[in-house]
Image 1: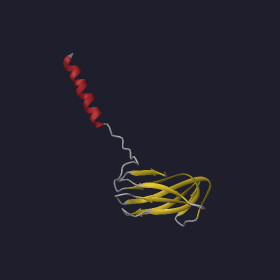
Image 2: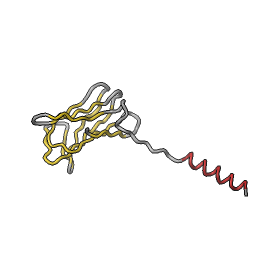
Image 3: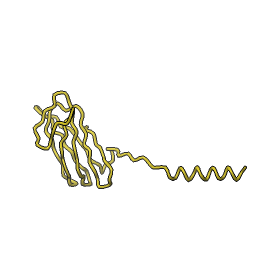
Image 4: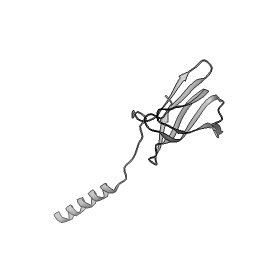
Length: 121
């Protein structure tokens, strides 16, 4: 009986060690990107800053009630606007000028095969 219990415990430990871990990418880590809004009289300035690391294939997703922007990097896709920001070197930033933005986020890669997301603050 005791040997069987030890076998079950060993098997349970082995299975627990093989379970995949869950990765989350909090935007509060200092070396990760920021996406901030500066309000202006006629439009807002949305600034994406990659932080200490270069980012790859950055895309901004914007939505709002009366969304207005004029940027050749942006296109309407169903109910939102997608802006192709591309690769952004560390220490540089990308800026969008828009009005009517209610919700926005930027999805980007860090070269680690994961998609990271930062929401507009």
